[in-house]
Image (cartoon, rainbow, N blue to C red; front, top):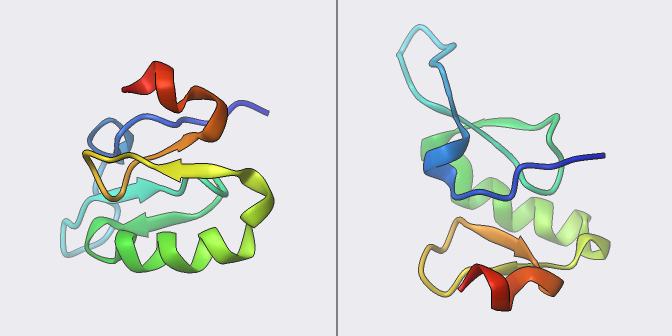
Length: 75
């Protein structure tokens, strides 16, 4: 299973709501598509539910998660 671990700006989907809000794919569960305005709240909840994924918060962008094994390479 391949997942997109890029920053949220690279994960923006075309707007699908009538409000024109941007949608973002969750790094913990790619089937979760969330409004960008709710993304930080969603990440917090999803991180608890998917603790086995071992994703680390990027020190530069709070909503960016990377695998623990790739943090050094990411920075």
